[in-house]
Every structure is written in structure tokens, then in C-alpha cells.
Length: 237
Image (cartoon, rainbow, N blue to C red):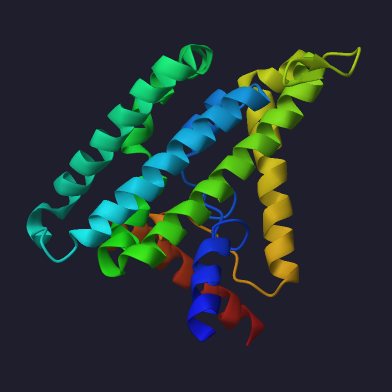
């Protein structure tokens, strides 16, 4: 029973608590670029989810075989293989989605979410939890993209999935400024929900980066946060 509960937690954590887009602020480039319509958002989300599940499973199986010094190139090679397979499927069965997503479909290879889960979770855990972790993160990623896609398409084009619903079109919503505006609103809502649930809010995207331990920017950010906290404490005292 406890094991089932743990597996369920591995799946659900990526939807709200550790949503890769709204909480960890990863994968922002495709998030802002492809969410001009709901159909594009679902296409990108499903493709990324498929790669997440497959790459997590394979990396978990090979975690004791891959040498530590070459683990990042090995992970990228595995991810690139699955991205190529997914891209071929999309080209064959959904050419319209392939044309809409354009370069962002093959760029899933360098998506921080997928590499981050490979480094932080799949390389340290058994296959089944790694699969559920990838599925949960993929569902969270897809949900975030779909929310943005629906909002931007509804207000920017007056439609959802091509079905006209509103007579008024606010074009800025399908332009980059509209994407940043909707993205910020959704992040604020996700942080509010996590705060009400008593969950820790991630304040820096560096905390979800697999290379944070060796990154000077992350160290500087930590030093700045610690310095600010100390200054506040001194002022209070």
C-alpha cells in the first residue's frame, strides 16, 4: 500500500507541486513559442511526454552501466534517438502539427525538462518510478501548455481548436507580449495554489537545473539570497 502511494506521488508531483513550467520555470522557450493555439500546445506536450517516458526508462535501465564522466553526452544521445522517432511519427501521421511546431519539435532534444529529469531522477531510481516521473512531468508540461494555448487562442483569435467562440479578437494575445503576460499570470496562480497547500515555492529556475551544482550563476544567486536574508535579519534585530 505504501509503495502504491509512493508511486502515485511520483506521478502527481509534476502536475502541480513541481510543475516543470509553472513551478520550476523550465522549457520556457517552446512554452512561449508554440502556445498560440491549443492544438499546437497539445502536439508539443504529447511529443515531449513520449520522449520523457522513453528516455527516463532507458536511462534508468542503463544507470549502472553509463560511466559518470560521459553521462550527459550519453543522456543527450538517448534523448536525441527518441526525439527522432517521435518526429518521424508526427511527420507521418500529423503533418499539420509538424508544420506548426517547426524547429521546436527537433529542439526537444535540448529541452531542460527532459535532461533535468534524466540527471536528477532517472539516473538514480528504478525503471517504474522513473517512468511515472516522466509521465507526471509530461502531463504537467502538457497541462501548462494547454492552459496557455486555450487562453491565447481564445482571446487572440476568438476560437478554441479552430471553433469560433468570441466575436472580438485581441491580437496581442497571440504575439510574444501576450505570451509573457499569460505565462506570468499562470505562474502566479500556481505559486498561490502551492502556498495555500503549504508547499515550498521554487523561487529560482536554477534550482531545477541539472547543472546547478557546477554553475557559477547558481552559486552567485545563493550567495545573494543568503546575503539578503542576513541583511533582513540584521535590520529586524
